[in-house]
Image (cartoon, rainbow, N blue to C red; front, side, top):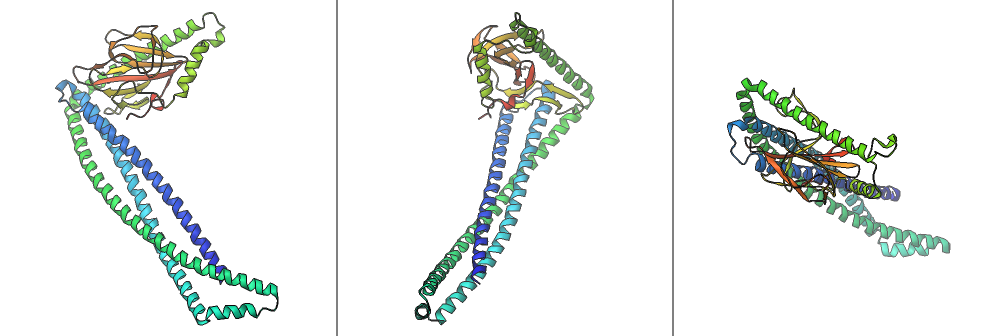
Length: 409
């Protein structure tokens, strides 16, 4: 009987520990989801402020539908994350309900066992009988063993009483947690319904715009292709400039070094410092939201059209100053007829590119420090949109800037 009770106690302790670990893991996941949601909410706030504040003219209609599509995509992600939270809460509520049921059963069993123990102890007039039990021992060793047994029995009684208190307290906390989670779930459902309502309204608005543009779809697609060609033209020129700079640095060296810059010790140290700041680099503008990500992706409106980006496009405010993300030297200031200037800054084996500027404050060969202003962002007069494309290259290989810059505060 004693062994059974001790095993039961061990099982309850293990159950408590397992429950605590499970709750910690669930809270950690909920926290991560809440942080992701907070980031998207911040993005949506910036999207509204930077892309939808000013009333735009008819020439901006193509831009409007692109902005709406991006906004819709972020809201869908927000709803998806909230649904994940709700599903997680459903699982937590179910787990809590089962655990409450298990604890109530355990509490009943422990109370019954404790009641039986007290009753037996009372009936046997424990104080007198215990003394007689010890005095009737045949040997000193037997008396010692019986004394130890009585002490263990007394301790076990205290532990049983303590266990009842612990289970009762745990039960109270889990019931409290259960009520909190049910309220939280209801709040998330209400918020999700509200977000879904605005999402449907925005989808309808985007659909209406696309419907009106149906007869201009070919022109719209031509505009996308033209913009892509212009972007590729700039990317090819950037690649050419970097290769030429590599070749110049290896002019007096063997051809085996021609794939990378022949760096001075100072330049190698700078490149190493740049690498160590991966994920910590500042943004090239003080305020903005990423409206186009790195890599090849379908166009947000014309899904059959593909767009390729060697960097990220950041929507920002009009006349926003553009700053370097790290110290280095200006490799080149590039400009084609009909396009806006691009500044390339070298950081050892790494190059950062700042495209779509209206003004440039630096020249080729200038030394620049981190966060130094090098230009001003361009604002499209017909759409009212201000944006910059920011890229990072390791030699001639484009890297995803989102892996290198800090989250925007």
